[in-house]
Image 1 (cartoon, protein in one colour):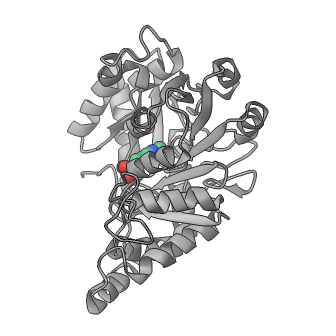
Image 2 (cartoon, protein in one colour; image 1 turned 180 degrees about the vertical axis):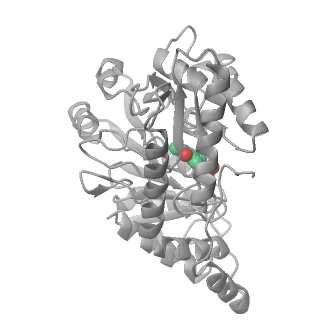
Length: 373
Ligand SMILES: *Cc1c(COP(=O)(O)O)cnc(C)c1O
């Protein structure tokens, strides 16, 4: 058997809506699905504005550019995340300031944030990691107390809630990705959400080359082409219709893995729930406990040979050559993120996975554990 790390489920109206695009000829960003998908995401997240873009990374770039934070100001963010978060901050002329991870939730350690706030801090970038939300209340309180903006990266938490309120509703500006392993996919795609009318206007303008409304092909500012196509939005609409089903499926996958690993003592499993949320398992992560003297790469190699594909955890920002070469994060240590990035990986957990594949992947993990113990 071979179990791929992610298989999407495109079995709803995806084909029908794509056919509609082809039949009508609306394939660019001007087609009707784009607005429908934006409205659908705005409704899901109870936001006034949703601006679709080409992918989640440029959603973060757009958010940072549109906020117009002071050049050279500091933005606090987790060290354990995808590089897109840090690169968006750097490209906007700001300085990322890193916070270590919580060892159990793998989210940013909220208790460390206040000590990182300085007179130069302008914003906090929050990233919900692997399907469990960050504890937002203390962060929103800090933002209020110190007058900071909040950028929320909810790419791994589409359809997730925090105390019943949707993820993607908390930032001054919030971002999603619709990559094929996300809870909604458009192949490639992303979204920026906010309530502020001016901020939304800036996003729309920057997304579309900053054409002057009064005169196309005249520009007062340099923008980008970050537009999402009608083809992508058509797939997104079909996916959005089935989001609840997808979330239920992902929770089922998580619960099955939890059950099958319950008796295994040398693995740290994801947290099933906190006081504010139940995990939606963007991925099912595992951490090899210290008593196992192999790292995640070694373990993944062995699983691959048995037909089980995995992916490593994120690699911390303060250990990225690209930033160290820029003299960022020199001599910083964030021990939790360093440990989980070396000992953590995730199992096949895409929405298309079958029960047999879950059982097989689990049995092969147990087999490898027997060999190395
Ligand atoms: C997937 C992801 C992104 C980037 O999205 P792309 O669409 O792949 O560019 C950004 N942030 C987080 C937390 C993600 O998981």
